[in-house]
Amino acid sequence: MPDTHILVGTPQRRVDGRAKVTGAATYAGEFSAPDLLHGYVVSSGIAKGRITLIDTTAAMAVPGVRQVFTHDNRTGMAWLEHNWQDFVGPPSHTFRPLHDERIHYSGQPVALMVTDSFDLARHAAGPVRVEYFKEAHETNLEVARLDAYEPPKKRAGINPPPKQRGNASAALAESFVRIENEWTVAPEHHNAMEPHATTVVWEGGGITVHDKTRGMQNTQAFVASVFGLPDDKLRVVTPFLGGGFGSGLRPRYQVVLAVYGQPGVAAVGARRADAGPDLHLSPADHQHAGAGRGPGRDAARPHA
Image (cartoon, rainbow, N blue to C red; front, top):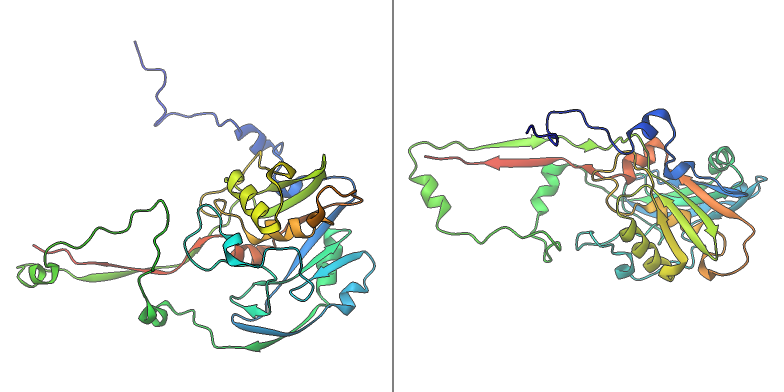
């Protein structure tokens, strides 16, 4: 009897394929609700340093602007770093948006606009005035590798390299044929068909988070930890994912800012007058916030 279940080398119908190619799929940034608010991120103009002044007076004077959040008026998010660790994150320092005046990378969010429309949010971001004290930054891998070190903690779920056996240097020195070379790997960025976006809606005494993620439980636990929310008041939904791979594995900062922009999120259960916001990252912000493959260097030393 012929095998009718051969998958490799034969065309297969994706469960979500028709919805995606016909436009019927609804992605995280496409959900709506009555009185939905809209968010927009103001990004850092330097790569390293600190904010010395951030003036939102002119932005707040624009009709339709509900609030401009910065590190100066940020409240209600966890302060301690361990509350920002997600299930699959490496054992390192975690990024906390709008945490303080420090700038850690180019394109870091320094303000969140919450307004009545997306176009208004983008327009009102222009008058936000930010001044910085610049510090020297390093983006050259060849220079930075001089300070390379072995991480003191290993990442959970990934076995560390095995212990060394024998004397590799001596064996190489005695070889008749030796080849030694290093290869550089260029950086690459994810540019998925669905950019990172989050829509937050108040429903049934709790909040529903529509987020671009393939780790709904991870995102739910992460958001609950950051805001101190009970699990039964927080639901994360992703019916369709437009390209996840590495960039959709872990929570990105826009999910935190979108939930933060939800009025009264710190007092779940209060009567609501507004929904949202939805927060779309711009193409430029997507390059900074989305996962990617940084530059690398591989060495090989085959011998015989």
